[in-house]
Image (cartoon, rainbow, N blue to C red; front, side, top):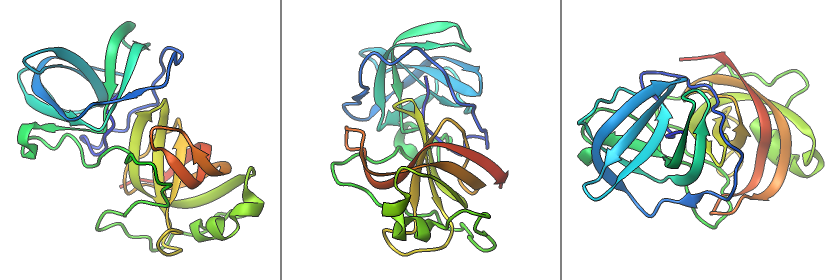
Length: 242
């Protein structure tokens, strides 16, 4: 059970495990705000019970500094039902996998520095790198490809294992039981300079990573998660962190 976030005290949560999926996750109806009624940390994650004034609901994510009584808001998440956290040995009847968590009004503690993988019906070709990310010195792995080469050679590479090195410019945890990573290496232009990866491994924005996985084309997960080019089931090895 997990809130998507990065930059919470520079923590790097391990991949979570849970009960087998019984149904496709349901998108949140909108932003939810309230007061933290209960919180706990386990396995690198923070769990929060949010009292909205009309109901109480659970959300969870990479470990952050949060206390009972704090005013928080969550957004852009998915509902998971009957989810079991093995580290807590506890089953949550309903829990939200969310894209962000912040102090009410957005000016409280910086619990997050990014938002969830965007939703929408159009196939996406990339994300925008945060300011300050430096791609200088990133080299193509031996026998591997650059990001731009993957795009230019996507048809013959489809269904094959590829390896690429780059910097993480976006990370979202535990959406549809996967971690979602965007990397860039300074090659390519708009539409060919960023590649999306699904993995069980974790990394944070700014990390230099070596990615090994299967290239797939025209992947549609539903709920607006549609990609022209992506790498699935990847091994993401952090070679250098910030």
